[in-house]
Amino acid sequence: MAALLVPALLLVAPLSTGGGRDGTLAELLAHAVDLPTPTERAEAAAELAAREDVTLEEWLDAARAFAPLESELTEPGMHAVTVPLHVLGATESTTRHFFVPSSWNRDDACPLLVVLHGAGGDGRQMVPSYRSTAEALGAVVLAPTESGANVGYTAEPRERAAVLEAIRFARRRFDVDEDRVYVTGFSRGGHLTYDLALRRPDLFAAAAPLAGGPRLVPERGQASIRFAPNLVGLPLRAVVGELDDAAMLWNVRDLVRRAREEGAESVEFEVLPGTGHSFDPEACTDWAAWFGARTRDAEPSEVVRASVREDEARRSWLRVTSFTKEVEEDFRPTIQVRAGKQPDEDELREAVADATCERTAVVHARFVEPGRFRVEAIGADEVELLLTTERLGDVDAKKPVVRVHDGRRERRVAVEIGADVLLGEFVERFDRRFLPVARVRTAVAPKRR
Image (tube, rainbow, N blue to C red; front, side, top):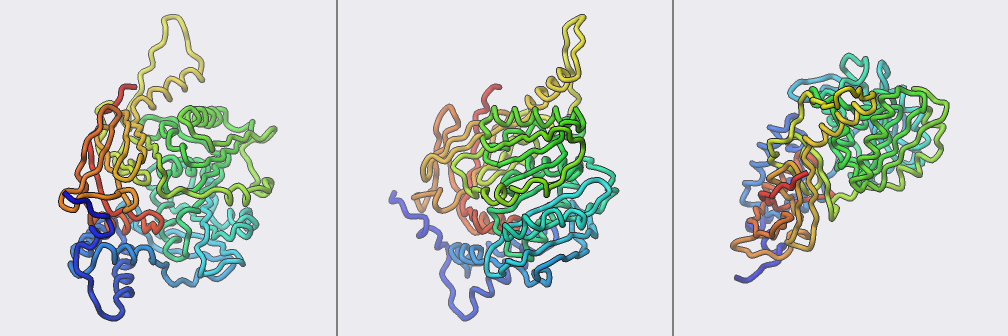
């Protein structure tokens, strides 16, 4: 069979003619993106993908040109807005504070700096410390206020989802550069920064948690140390005081150690001498330089994803779709000790961390060349690859396949190509930097630990 270049294969329906075509597609795409729930967005995407009068190439053009909504928030200075947002099936009325730098230009994509407050605080309190950084970066600051009890970080999915919805809100009102979204926070906000970065590593260009730490609570699925491999490719700057909570410091050190053992080269750990549970962001004059030097790779050649649940199993072009039975999110660890030996607290913590990591799936995926990939997995037996036209390469028009090596053998795997792949992704992420048009789902042979 003859092989066809992907651009030719993309023309799956006849081109349409008529004035205002691009504007119409832009409006349809914006309507689907702005629906309040993932279910509604998915249904809208499916309806759009089924249109026979629009080609996949036309949808790609519309996605590349996707623009934010008109908003009064874009004037330079401070803004506060309270709006209802959909958070995990419930509607929450939350306040988000914004700072728009004087250099902001609506014609240029700008960085977004997400700043998370401590217990009992609010977003407004956080903004002043980051104004100079925002001005230097030309970044918009988003500082959401916790709408719940606000007594400290509880590590519940709702808290993370609320921030993600706030980020979605900001990205629809500013032309945010998808490769320059940064997250930082103090105390409760530092804990939350760890959780967001470790569970959604492909959303951020860098993370800087302050006076916070990752969790080590296997019960209720709150052990985020297990996601240390996700720091491969995600710059992290962890700052804590040497007199702060000893358990929190241990957690940070352990996370940093495990991440570096996995090959994370951009993990920094700063201990402030003589400092307790406090931090002044203005005391560090290099924040603008640190954030500004870091950008996200929207389509890296290699991806590492540690996960335990399907709704947190995606990273860039890799998604884990099936876990082995050894993977557990919520469990009570049993620690064996030698008779007559009482382990100290650090030994117990390390044993719990080890037990948690042993129940975590870790998948490494590598792009070899167009149409060829390598996937090695621990704790997962099926994955999905989302491919752009460049990664897909030349495929057979009648029976498109790619080759995937799972560490034991290479196999030919069927490819699904179409607007449903592109639009299903775009309505959730509206990421103009990564526009997959093909989906590959393949079994993998999990390795032993």
